[in-house]
Each structure stands twice: as structure tokens, then as C-alpha cells.
Length: 127
Image 1 (cartoon, rainbow, N blue to C red):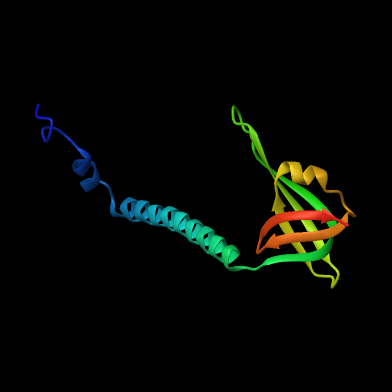
Image 2: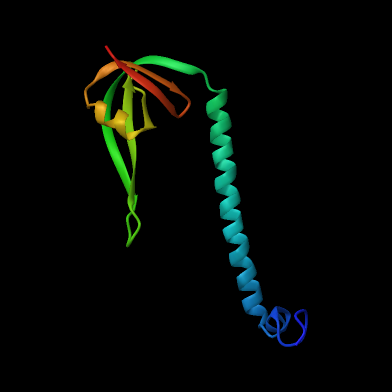
């Protein structure tokens, strides 16, 4: 038997597959690839937008904290995302992702100066 051609191969399988399955498989493939491309473009867009934003320091207070836990099925460990909502003097609010240690140091009601660049949390100094 020759390595390159004797016997059934993928082309034999593909030629015997009904048209519906070929179209459905192609559609699923395009949707999956489209999803990856969309997520990639959104990430690049957010990164560029944050880099173009000014570094802002404004008086604010912590009004809410929340966590988002994901994963943790079977042998996988769980991961946690941390978010803090800040309210400015004018009543506007912004929710920013923070790292775990920062999340632990902030308490609802804390007042101070928030430093952020777009959607990037840079720091919070208590007043």
C-alpha cells in the first residue's frame, strides 16, 4: 500500500457526503471563524481606544463591587473577575475591572481620587 494514495481517504469521504451536510458544516465553520474574528477585532479596538484616551484623575467614591466567577468544572479551577463601580461628583458612574488585591482594599463608600484611562483602572487614592 502506497502512503500517498492507495485506499480510501478524505476525498472519498467528502464526495459521498450529502450536500446538506456539506452546507451545514461549512456554515458552522464560518460562524465559528466569524466569532473568533469578531472577538479579536473588538479586543484590538478596545486596546486602541484605551491607548488613545487621556489619563483622567477625578474625585469619585466607590458605590458598588461585584465579582464574576467562571470555570471550575471537573478538574478545572475557577477564575474570578473583579469589578468596582465608581460614582463621580456629577452623578456619572463607571464600572472598571480591577485586580483581586485592589478589589480587597476598596470598600463601598470610600471617597478619593480615581485614576483611569478609558476602561483601564489605574488607581484610587483615598481622600
